[in-house]
Amino acid sequence: MKTEHVHAHALNQAHNDLLRDLRGLGHFIQPAEEASIVELRNRLAATYTHVCDQFCLEEQGGYLDDIQVSEPRLQRTIGELSEDHRKLLDALTQIRDDAAVARSVDDVLRHKVRAWIDRFLQHETRENDVIQDAVDSDCGAGD
Image 1: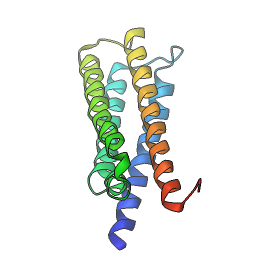
Image 2: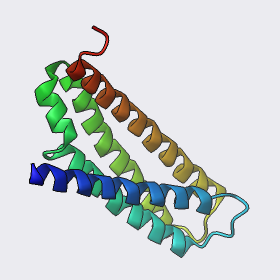
Image 3: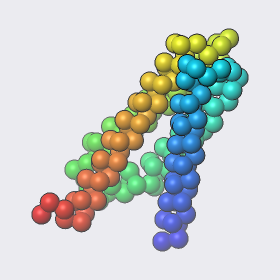
Image 4: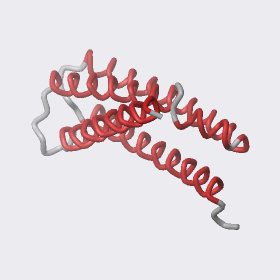
């Protein structure tokens, strides 16, 4: 039980760190903001680290593993969420690569960052829906 508590705490911390990153990135890329490309690179690097932490904690002995065991009917969906993790990381890597060679934060880069944030938030919503489905099933909701 202690290990589960530590894991849950680590996942909560990673999630909070990532949400803070996303809020900061979202504000930072607003057109009215005077955005430094160096600062954007630093923010993207921090976000990448926190995304990796969160995805690792979700997948490796985390609640996605637990749901697959307790709700075999959701295995395909969990597999899709795990694949989405890889796609989100690949897309963020591409944005980081673009920022690495950019001279300034232009509208194209802002759009890429905003689109990635939106895609990540959609992914989180889907994960939350799957978790809720598993909890409802476990608790007998809808019986």
